[in-house]
Amino acid sequence: MAHPLVLALFSTPADAATGARALHEAGVTHDQISVIARNHDEDSTLARQMDATPGVDIEDSRPAGRLGELSGYVLAAIAVVLPGIGPLVAAGPLAAGLGEAAGHVAGGLASALSGAGVDAGRAAALQEAVEEGAVLLAVHTVPETVSAIIATLDRSGALEIDTANWTG
Image (cartoon, rainbow, N blue to C red; front, top):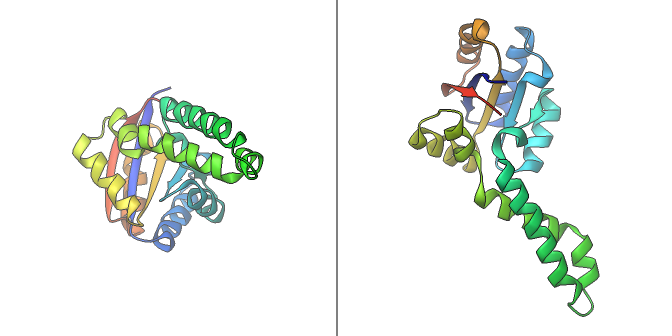
């Protein structure tokens, strides 16, 4: 179902945590906040610390996820025939990591944000900021609460705040 998405960019994980705390105090629930960081491991760690969800639902498009999955299978198939290390690599984190990397190349944050109505140039700038270490909080909400969420994020130190229409 389509709904407003409020995006807030923070310079550090600590600043983003302050924003997440303020959102929780304002009544925003765990499942309404997505944390987007440089990689999925960082997303997951920060999300646990902030009582939020990892941003994988925003960052990874279905085609990107499928490409990553297929790439993992191809890498695993190739690795199986390598003498000595094949079975270890095929079942290990290397295949998964390389498959995930291929998925990111095909999709990514900028693509997902553009799909939600964020100007392509702005979406690319947000992706670049995240790649450089900033943290993006994305708040899934309803039209009636957008202004209050923007005010909360502004008071909590967000560097930049944008809105989009999430259809995912």
